[in-house]
Length: 158
Image 1: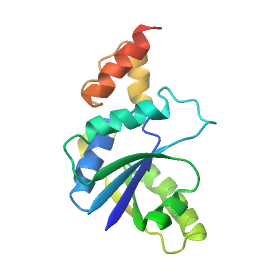
Image 2: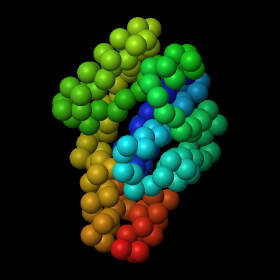
Image 3: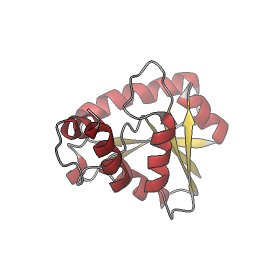
Image 4: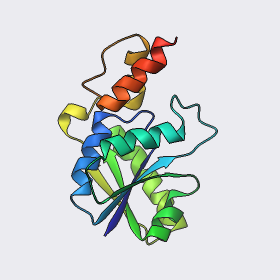
């Protein structure tokens, strides 16, 4: 079975990496799909985010990191995949249920599976990581090493 773990991943966090590590052992193929959204002002471009995720996935044989744009449900249907979403809180669940139902409208056979994050990652978000890093704070415990270095490089220029 194939699964897709989609997201902006701007930047990848330890919580994302944890979901990837857990999901990759459950599926024949895990596709990590990086959202291309030109309307969104991202800190890292799509190529950088794909590179960061490939570093996180290093050594995992059944993983593919791709960039995508368009409807996620179409990608999932095309690849014959279920969609994996990580949940940190009840607020995440409420939003993700709405999104999962939207996928059902466009592609009724596409399923969404929810993975509850490990407790130590429940307060980590890409936004929090960027905010802390922008003020020179240490984010090494909440982002993978490759992202920690990238954040240092981005914010040392400011």
